[in-house]
Image (tube, rainbow over all chains, first blue to last red; front, side):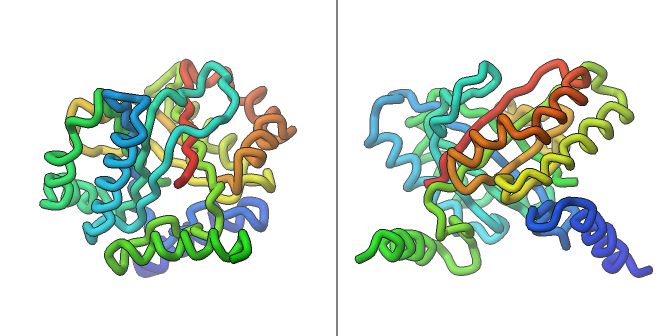
Amino acid sequence: MQEYNRRQFIATASVLAVAPGTIVQSEDKNLNQLIHHVFFWLKKPGSATDRQLLIEGLKTLAGIKEVKKLLIGTAAATENRGVVDNSYDVSELMYFDNIEGQNAYQVHPIHKAFVEKCSHLWEKVVVYDMQVI
Amino acid sequence: MQEYNRRQFIATASVLAVAPGTIVQSEDKNLNQLIHHVFFWLKKPGSATDRQLLIEGLKTLAGIKEVKKLLIGTAAATENRGVVDNSYDVSELMYFDNIEGQNAYQVHPIHKAFVEKCSHLWEKVVVYDMQVI
């Protein structure tokens, strides 16, 4: 079996293994997919202006071709069950085709411009990179 | 403009505002979308068996109808830039249509069975709930 077909077969099989109607690995043709999830805590957490400035800055990152999908959000008002950290202000969730895409993103001029323009807004950043399996 | 159309218009406009080819809010018909991202640190981080048991347990959660999308992964081998926390072992990323979906998931029998069966495997859990904007 060619490499492409083998991978496609594995991905398809993993989808079929779960209940119909639910998507596991919807981007299942790419087993190298990487998810980059960043959480920002603002220096001025109560500032709607600063939050909006950060959100607008994050939107510019969609112009980087390696960023295949970008979702921006804020802490949800879910129940605080102890393990939930909803103390952050803004979050970005990005999909890359592979680790090389994420590496290219880090040094991309648009990303550098965003950091230069917006980094004074945040107090703390936490990043999680997840290799989808 | 009806509420549905107004929301669709806003979502479409936000997509058009960014570079073509990049998707922002691909699930853009739902502005209540909630992303639930969980990170697990195993009691035995080096145990491939325990990691696999946890992954298999997580796959069962796809059987919950409120879970619209489930991605499972491990820490990516991205560069350690100080802000990156790649110390976790396994991660699940879930999409819900709204906060009510996430609340229903928390008390769903399949979720409870997963916690009962697998919670002995992990030392620490961190959860982030993100309201997509």
